[in-house]
Amino acid sequence: MEANIKSESIPPAIPAEGTGASFEQEALEKLKAGRDKLTAEIGRVIVGQDKVVEELLIVLFSGNHALITGAPGLAKTLLIRTLAQILDLDFKRIQFTPDLMPSDITGTEIIDEDPSGHRKLRFIPGPVFTNILLADEINRTPPKTQSALLEAMEERQVTVAGEMRPLAKPFYVLATQNPIELEGTYPLPEAQLDRFMFNILIDYLSEEEELEVAMRTTSTASAEPEQAFTGEDMLDFTRLVRMVPVADAVARYAVRLSQASRPDSDNAPDFITNWVSWGAGTRATQNLILGAKARAILQGRYHVSNNDIQAVAPPVLRHRILTNFRAEADHVSIEDIIAKLLETVKPEESGL
Image (cartoon, rainbow, N blue to C red; front, top):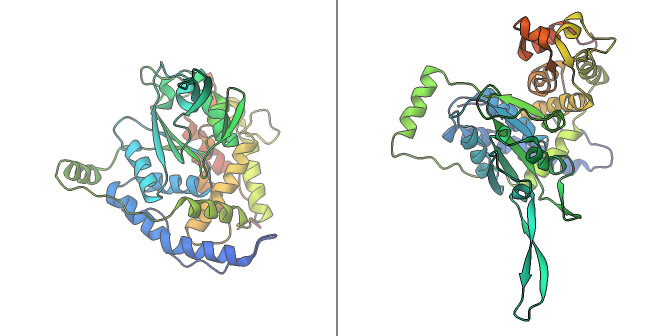
């Protein structure tokens, strides 16, 4: 399996303000040396799903969180566990169920009693204290428990019994969810959805790919991926992504896409006002630009193009645009609206 990441050489680094060029050049060289190994190690375990892998790597190199949507049995959990092994990061998994409580995620305090009878409170950390948290089937638990992740995802800390406790660095929430049409699912609140940089769709494999999976998983052979990067490397890469320059025309294109998705905006096309009840907010614009920067770096480029913005637009926008009843009556999907939005909102001529 080859993820959609090219191995062309990265041009010399451009020194960023307040940061020595030595760090930037060193991080670029380390990324260049390890990215092919990273995708190769993923391919030892995961068959196909090139686009899913590419989008997930963009999220991780941006230092953000991802929601992966797909039917059961499509290797969502295996993909995330494999990435944790390759990046040598601490990994914990929470199986979200209807009876899960917020304290099952963040942790709780218990009373300890020593031999002298003196009692004191002791904090038992929850599974959120890790590097990669797999929130498995997150939409099978009610919104009250889903919201326990809001502070962790935005501020990289949790507050338990009035005390703020910082989380590990790096920290990623990679959540999986089943399509909302399935039994026993709860739609995620808009505030929760907006914390995820991407909503990544994972679909069924082709006939040949499914055959390969069946042959691999029904034999005695097993593949253990090797480490490609470390947690410190990922923190450096996250800083590096933010240093990537972006032209004003390209950034303005991201802004115009987000604004055009809002039905009350002066820039909204007619189909948006007809089919959309709520559009993408400012976080969408930020994530369009950040995701485009990460995609450029992963493809060996040190500049952002309009093509990068267009490539990351579907996973950034699909969970931030809410359709109305008219769209449902017209059998119009979110994917249809995003495709039409990209056709309608054109980049400036001066853009890359």
